[in-house]
Amino acid sequence: MKVGILGGGQLGRMLLQAAANYVVETFVLENDDNCPAAHLCHHFTKGDITDFETVYNFGKGLDAITIEIESVNVDALEKLELQGVKVFPKPAAIRTIKNKVVQKEFYQTHQIPTSEFVITESLQDLQKHIDFLPAVHKIGQGGYDGKGVTVIDTPQDIEKGFDTHAVLEKKVKIKKEIAIIVAMNDKGETAIYPPAEMIFDPVWNLLDYQLSPAILPEQILWKAEAIAVRVVKELKSPGLFAIELFVDINDEVLVNETAPRVHNSGHHTIEANYSSQYDMLWRIMLGFPLGNTDAILPSAIVNILGADGYSGNAKYEGLEEILSMDNVFVHLYGKTQTKPGRKMGHVTIIHKDYQDLTYKANKIKHLLKVIA
Ligand code: ADP
Image 1 (cartoon, rainbow, N blue to C red):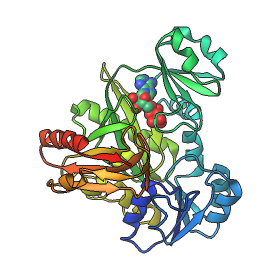
Image 2: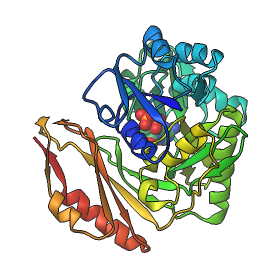
Image 3: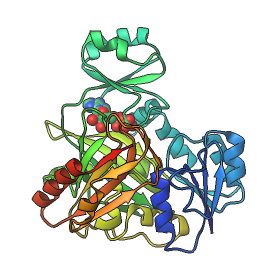
Image 4: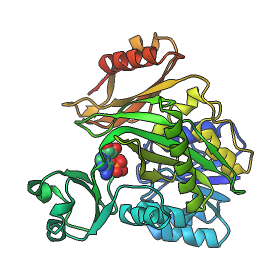
């Protein structure tokens, strides 16, 4: 089979690493010919994943196509789908998810628990919703990694809002942030990964470190799993999905957002679960049985981010020491240039003991530094 990936970042790179275990010819479309996935595929095409003609021409000779980012040209994917190219996930699902306003409306329509929201078109519009505060304002389309998301606690914060099509969500009193990856094949069969629990860096608003399986009371776990599976069933699309959820202070479970693709919250599945999220997506696309999602051992992920104050040719400090630690797996994404907060790689730690995981995660965070 010939399978294409739209986007050539680290998710595409790890997807290609898993592809090497199967009989598949891989194609990548991305604007930067030195991107993380460029040198691991059979065929690289330099081009814009948001451009109709580029995506259509890239996809028309392929058997299947997938994405590693939502900001792709969905019209082209729809045309390809009509012409018999299998698209994972279905273009309709990408369209629903791609715009945060449409995504919230989807949850509402299908009675999937999510924070209350109003839609705003401008800052002037936002002014009318002072009663709704504290809230979180999210740009409809084009936001990524915390950009395009701003907290509006007081009327004074309104000027930080977005002067465009956006959604204003009630601010959830969060106890825990978790993510559940759900895989669905062509037959509608599903497989659920154990949830991961995220801890965020307040400065960069990027994932700080993550533990999996999340430690949750059984009742909350069941609720979260049921909601995550419903999201995927209602999207009515085969593929691999990451559902980000909030557990609030009253133990209610709410969907924050869904990613219709392999996801940062599933990096640990490479070493910590029998079938990784990347392996799973290939199984789905190549028509093989779903894999085993069970955790082999608990795990932690530490993101390797570009250090503050350094931009330029990346240099990794502390790598030797980290590589001498037991059950620690380093993944560098092959990005030559670093800048503050840039995702340069991640480290996975596996251990039966959560205390050991947290200890090592913190140690790694302090030892490893990406400078220039
Ligand atoms: P992105 O798609 O850029 O990752 P998210 O929608 O996931 O943005 O929001 C980023 C972070 O902001 C979340 O992980 C969470 O910590 C916080 N957040 C988002 N929405 C809400 C909300 N309704 N209430 C409270 N915190 C929120």
